[in-house]
Every structure is written in structure tokens, then in C-alpha cells.
Length: 155
Image 1 (cartoon, rainbow, N blue to C red):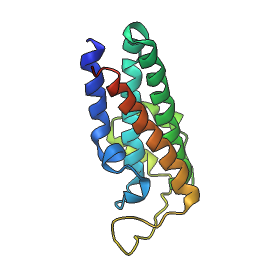
Image 2: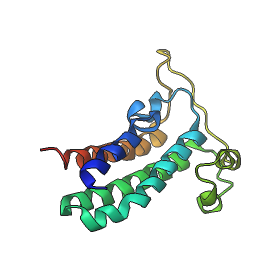
Image 3: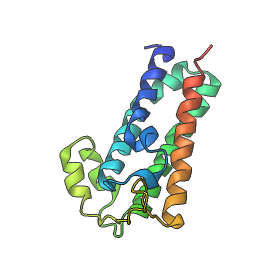
């Protein structure tokens, strides 16, 4: 598949609530953190599958941006795990084979999720900066990387 066709498809991966639908973590009022981590991990795993296309056929810019995308989404996942869970009872490596299955959510729920109070506006949660800022930093970088990648094929 040519990258001109593949890149817009990859861009669609980021149209879900985990990314563009909630471009700041504090807008995730459902606070379903395990599902959010799982969704981001699914996206990351899918991106790894397509990496050889960029290595083989990508321009130098596309290769660079794709590597940035992989790094940023990985750090986004790490920051969510560090900030949104009170305890870390399991390591991701223990559940790598469960990505894409309901068992991932069941097993990952062993990590105790933090819950935050809704703000008076009801549209955001009151999340301390020490949790919010690192997550938002890498969410923003992830969205910036996918946007750069999509723009790399525009003429």
C-alpha cells in the first residue's frame, strides 16, 4: 500500500476519544483509565505493524515523524499509567499478549485507578497538575506528530 493511502488511514486511528476526541486528559469525565490505556496500546501496536512501510518507502521527514509518533504515544501511555493509577500491581509486559482482548481490561483492572472530582462545569475533572501536565504534554505531542505525518502527503 502506498504511503499516500496508508497515512490517512493511520490518521483515522487518532479520531477516537482517547486522542482527538479528548485532547486534554481532564476532559475525560468518564475516567475509564484502563480502557484509555488499552486503546492507546492498541494504537501503538498497530503503528508498529506499519513501521516497515515507513522504513522502506518513507521520505526522510516521514521516517523521522513516524519515529517521533511512536516515541510520543509510548510516553503518553507511560504517563497515563504513572499518573492515573494509585498502585501498579502488574507490568505491561505481563499483558502484552492480551492487547486487543477483553482479558487485557480484566487483568489491567488490578491496577487501582485514581478518580477525580468533577469540576462545577461538569465538563472537566479536577486533576492535579502533577498528573495532568505530563499526560497532556505527550498527548499533544502525539497529536502533533500524526498531524505532521498527514501533512507530509498534502500537496
